[in-house]
Length: 324
Image (tube, rainbow, N blue to C red):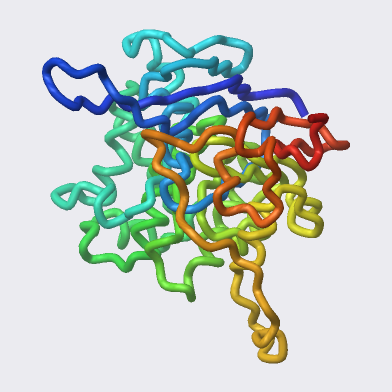
């Protein structure tokens, strides 16, 4: 598969003002992340809350201005492209937000919600737009389409609202979608339904996905590749089955240990979950950011940041695999 998106050493820092005469202080939400996504590929980004997943996704979409690094989409560097020149990218790349209740305007009908991006991008006649809206509703299995098109968001269930969000994301036929925790606010009974629907849309349309989640267990249902983030850094990347079956980074291992086991006989097993909380990204610890919680930390982990090391078709940023 051809490469669609490449990010190199991407950074996004947020300035925190401490006072009129003090020096600016920065929160390093994303700090040097690199990733490649091929056409039609689905990549999951996993990590604890506050690790920078959502900020990374929004920076890739250029909803945030990058502090450093590079974003290349279909061979075009869009890192610092002016907003007025990014209308083509707004059509090619889309977002599914975490909260379907807050992301849909309550005073619009579903028809109007889906028509708005078509009007903004000057797509089709009124009749052509109607056909595109109905096809999008059919694609996300909201039928009969006339019934749902006339409804307002508050008349729908959470799962139905998220389907509308998916319909809005695909209506311009994008090449790339960032789905930011798309099932975290839904009932457990509909989460797998939505993930399977996203997978079906991805395969039918050939669209590339970034699936952002804190739930490592759901990634198997959706993606081929997995990236683990911790405190603004990418600590492990690779094919999802290999990463889950044989984690290299201690943090990946910790995330896997934190997944509840449905088998009753396994619940008595000792689960080695590291204590403590992720670090403050205003003043992260020196060296490896995971070392204060890592059971295998060495002296060098406290002093130097580990480089990314390639091991087969995987990469890991850990001194256990790097030359000291």
